[in-house]
Length: 552
Image (tube, rainbow, N blue to C red; front, side, top):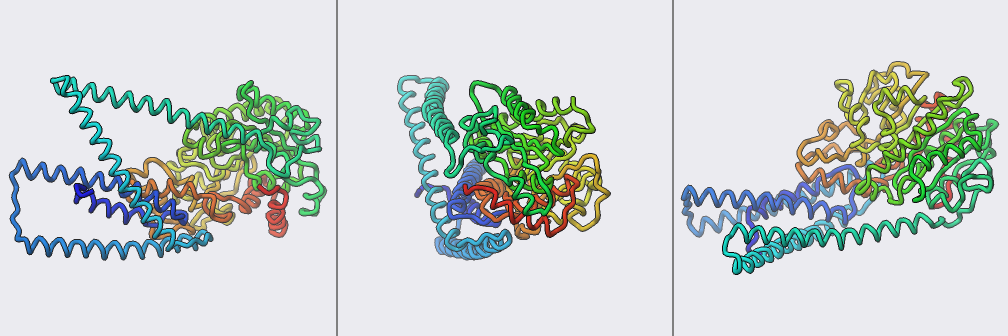
């Protein structure tokens, strides 16, 4: 490292400072290390490039600066002291801000330990990466020197080197990357075939996987087994709400390599017909995330609010978890959601409008992203469903992005206002069901179709976007979120990786913050279903839902 770029190290120090500034979720030491590593590395590269350009300009202009040795020593010493003081102040200030973030989202962390250890590990990773890059560059130079001994022409020598490196990268991708990907897929498939502890096949014929079901217990997959064994029965609903209740219907189809998404969706439809789901008051198409998980708070809320007079339909589209699907396969959520909704909707549309159930759709995270892809536009969605609840929608979802871009002037990005809330309403908490973020009342909510977008200001899954690399997003510039640190600031590259790292920790805060949506879904579903309940009943439902789910 003795030949490291001085300008690069100065810029790298700036990258270190920005890496420690607050974002949305309090970080663990590992996430601090990742932020420090990546931000410092890129800043070092930029500084090194600027340093090279400066030296080149000095050479071609023959610029020479003569300074006494004493002056150089004094300037250098003063410069180091200044950088050390700024670094110490930034470390203390940023750590205090991380503590503030921790308090805002209700997630206690040992922030001083996390910051200190994270910085130390991050700088080790930075140094190791710089050395690795230098080693690779040295190897390529040696390769060129060796080739140039046999091929005199420089251009041909460069071509041979480029081909050799390309061949090496191709081999690495095919041997290492693909082998790793296949190994992960194999592990995911084996996990999918397992059954969580304490889960047994349901006995109710109104559940998939039961003896009466067209879908076998083994075919449902791990997440599907959880779905059909969770949730309240009629007796539980009656006890909580104090009103007569029906047994809720839950149907599910697991992923099967011998059938495509259309065939899988038709399996769900067959289950809906078998269980009499189209004779219920409400039918909800729930879109799963990753390997088929759906948010129990959302499903159970509907079951309690409707007195069990409802049916829930969903299916699995992948073996990958949400992270794997997010990084490697964003087409499966869309294809699966389109197949499921279209098959159910096409059948539902043939039924008598006076007797068929009201049709709703919902999804959390990737389930929201996939579920919205079943519609070509927000108008198409409004024309096909009686309501929707989209929760923690990823920022790359097309319909969501269009609504955000066309929000009413003056409404913040975290809770945009669309047509004064006549049909579509955004909300960060239940208090914003009936008024905007600034407290102004909405127009009366349509009794025909009600669409709710639920998104916490501190949810990094919603607010992360690739554009953060080069431009400041509106939500960060406005700083309007109640559970977001007011000192959050945008910096190129660093902010992008900060929020990306936040996504890995997005479900660690308690419900109501980050990417955890829990009790707030009860009053929101009550409003979307147009089935108002008193506060006491909704509190009782929120208290009961966790007890109807088996331990994970």
